Image 1: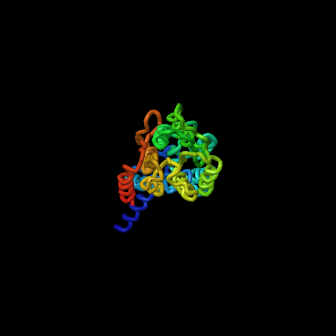
Image 2 (image 1 turned 90 degrees about the vertical axis):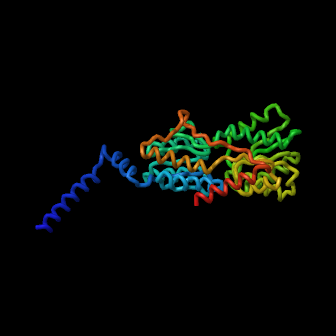
Length: 332
C-alpha cells in the first residue's frame, strides 16, 4: 500500500510539473522571466568592429559584468573587421535566440537595415560607435566629438607653431571616426594647423603602415600624424621608426594599446586620448541583462550612456597603466 500510494503521488507530481513547464503561447515570456529571475544566466553577445588588443580590455569588463549580473556573454571580434562579418554574427545570434547584443557598427549608415532586422528579434544596443538612425535601444561609449576635441588640444600642444597633419583610421564611414574628425576640426579651426587629408586602411595593419610611408613621400613637410583608431597609434610609430623619423614628426593617438602607452612614455607619441573599453563591456552586459529580465536598465532619456575620456601624456602614463593593469587582474 505504501509503495502504491508513493507511486501515485509521484505520477501526480510529474503531471503537474509537465503542465507547468510545458506552458506556451502567451505565458512563454512570463515563464522565461521567472526562470531568469530564479538564477539562469542571461545569454547575450558583444560584437566589436575588429580584432584589436583594445577589445581585450573590453572583454575584461564583459567578464566582470557576467559575474555581477548573472549573464553569459559571447565576445565576437571580426578577424577582418568587415561589415559582412558583423552581419553574419547578427544573423547567427538571431538564429540562436540570444536575448540581446551590443555591437560597434563598422558602417553606421549602411548597416541600418541589418541592425533593425536584428533589433526585431533581440534587444540591440550600440557601443564604441553609434548608429543613432537605427532602432538601437541605447549607445554605450565615449562622446566622440569631445574625444576628437581632446585630440585636437594635444595636436595644438604638439605643434605650437602650426604645420600640416594627416589623419589615419580604419574607416571614415564609422560614426566614431566621423565624430572624432569633427572634434579635431572644431579645435583646429582658425589655427595655422592644416589637415592634409584622411588615409583609411580597413583595419589592415600592413596598409596602415603603408599609408604612413606614403604620407612621408607625398608630404615631406608633414608635421604630425594622428591615429583615430586604437591600432593606428602602434602602426604609425612602427612606420615612423622604419622611416627614421621618430622624434622628427609628432604623433597623437587614440586609445590605450600597450605599444601606444610605451611610445608615450618614451616620448615618441605626444599624447593619446584614452577611452574606457572596460566600461564599454561592463555597461553593455549590465544593460542587456537588465533588459532581458524586464528590469530598469537605467538608460538615460537621450539613450546615451556616456563613458568619459582622458588625455594621457608622459606625466600620467605610469599611473594610468597601473590602474589598467589592476583592473585587468581583477577580472581574471
